Length: 80
Image 1 (cartoon, rainbow, N blue to C red):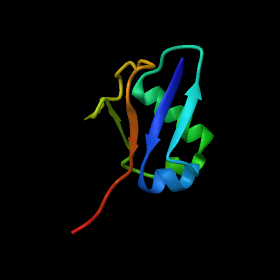
Image 2: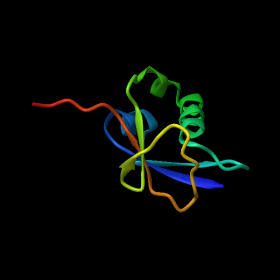
Image 3: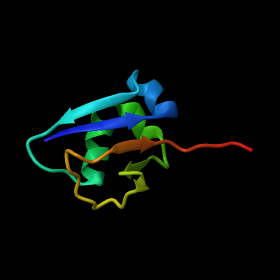
Image 4: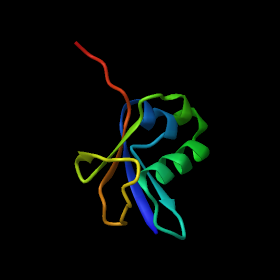
């Protein structure tokens, strides 16, 4: 399975690109995907409230992903 993940804010800076791709032999849950991303990019583990959006909606940790899903890694945002 090949998953493409859109990156924003600090996650884009950590990875060095606006998206990244992970290829794995099995399907993943959102939690499994986050675990793999944190292993590949250890600086992501320091971000406490990192979320995944799947198909334009925030995703639960146990959501099973499809290669066709639009996946985005959402860092915490601040503003006023």
